Length: 213
Image (cartoon, rainbow, N blue to C red; front, top):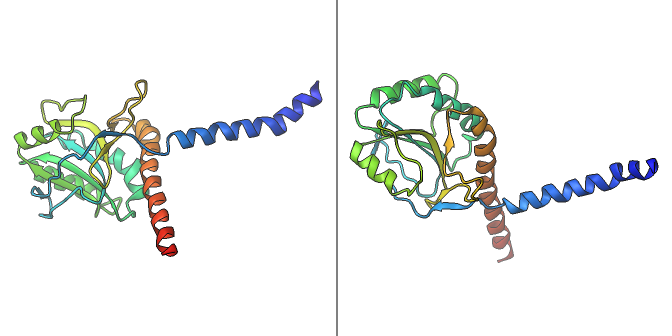
């Protein structure tokens, strides 16, 4: 009996565990779409007067509200848990929509982030309060902006401007709470890796197709 148990632990259990995790990876190989084709905002000005677009970029999108400095810890959490790991990926950008009038606060946050990381893919974009609210409404989310037009959640937008997340009833997730390092390190990082996997797989497939031509 002992011999059979040892054999099971050494040989059968690892195979069962492998099949379980392999099936899990396959079932989450594509992150669901929450909202299709959200609007672009390339007409709005950024902190450096650049025109920032969602097109052909994987975007982490946030809404700062007017209390940027009070919530600055959220930006540092996001920077530490996600941005610093992947900011060298050329098709990635972090975009924060802010009310007009908060430019100095945004500049201060950038200057603080700059002491610990390359900030070239951080972008703060400014619009009127009405424009921000109208834009957020078009994302068709369950969560709402607060009275300062902000939210601690950030959202994953793919290169086709689709807002991605989890649609399962028990695990529904449209955004990721930047006040929680554990949410960023686990749920958001897992989902973000799936997006990267999708594009790397598509790139590999296209490269293989070109070689065959």
